[in-house]
Image (cartoon, rainbow, N blue to C red):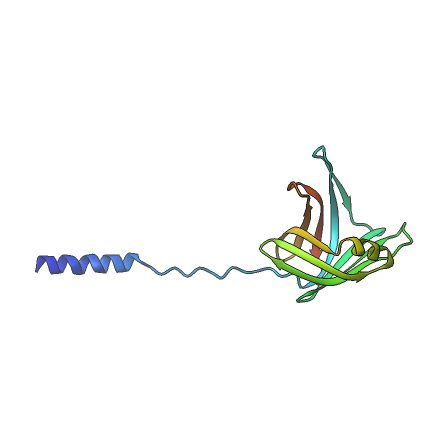
Length: 148
């Protein structure tokens, strides 16, 4: 009888301590929407970084749908138009943009390379994309804020 009572009490104690914890679902951030460039970082070989802030003379926007990307850039001192259109994927901290066409100036670059791969960090209101060289060093980064 003592053994049965011991087993019962032990089972009761273990079941009380074995609470089921419900973890809140992890919210996955999306790129869908309109984004405005806040700043551009240019990494130099000596480890220094130049920061260029967006201004009325230098603006850039990106717009993402579920699978499409379109970006445009204004450089007021430049007579060239800058924009690109294509597809993108975003998975496991990597953003891949494959451009189909762009402005006349951009089409020259697209003919040489139409696929751009970035490391990305994102939250609800901002994201940073970083291009990494073959040795794993950052080349440049763009910081965006969500505007829609």
